Image 1: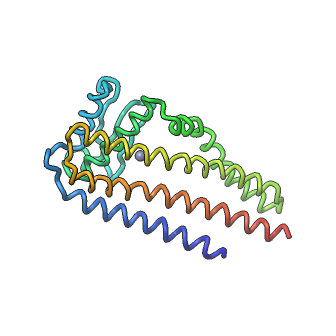
Image 2: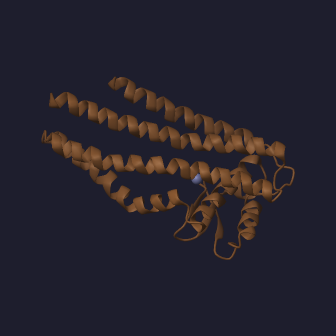
Image 3: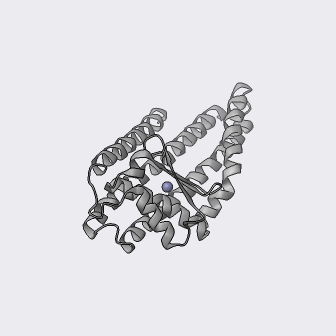
Length: 223
Ligand SMILES: [Zn+2]
């Protein structure tokens, strides 16, 4: 059982990484008909929501390092996403705009997520330390406390899932509404976005497995 809880999540995370990388490879070579780049798409979506003055767009290095920072109001697009007009570029850029819209509309899950950020930062750091200390001192209640603290991070990851799926849904709606892509291209955009979401699902299950493993060890030692 222990080995299963280690190996299955590892394979899951690895497979989802492989999947997103291969999707990215595939869809970064298909250009869309409108020839709009990730940057163009971001500008267009922001403009259509009157957010172009409030939100800045920045080019950053790396691959798939794209994100939206609600504190600085900056959408960061990686080099390729920024300047190419591939299916992958417009999908990822529009997805980040989806996060902008979530913040702008105070979407419920994003609000819960923002509320949890400082708590998660604290609890996952100390949760781990407490588990180790509890382990060294053989204090099972302390280990249990550590596990409880770490499960806050799991809740955070769970809240992240609908947030990610929702951002992708918004991305598809915007791309079609603004005539950036055709119906045919929409299918490919959706596939690209789905593969990106799987990595979040995989890492959630990996952490769930880790917590289960701790609980199993704890129960065994408690007998
Ligand atoms: Zn996202």
